[in-house]
Length: 161
View 1 (cartoon, rainbow, N blue to C red):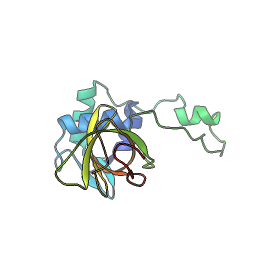
View 2: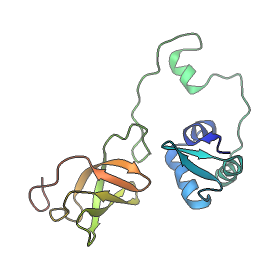
View 3: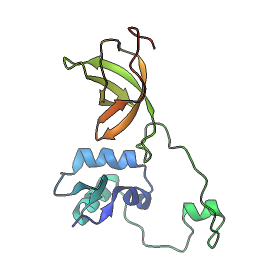
View 4: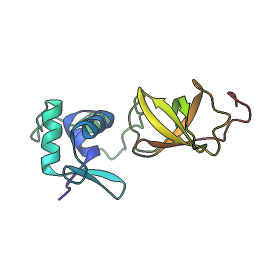
């Protein structure tokens, strides 16, 4: 039923995963158009069509032009892996490496704060939020969806590390 992996959909359409994710959150319905399977977002055929309609792209038929990965390797037949590249700022990363966020506010629950990453509001799990202040820059690591965790120890003093 769910046959299209989000990473491959983004690659096929030539868009970032963050863009595909934004379309998914805006247009698609979980369970009907997509679902999480084994930590990966997978789409149905109908879900893929809705994504294509939203971004105004058509899935390209296989062409004879080399893919970007083949261009980096210098053509087909070479076994060297493509060079590691850093993901553009604000995109969803596959390796869950720390990203920088800015604290927006705290909640009554002292184990959660709200932060902003690339214009998007997310929740961040922390051990204790009493020393976090609005505007503070913090490193966070993606857990799932819009839930992140602090990627270092909590600050020892209010507003500073």
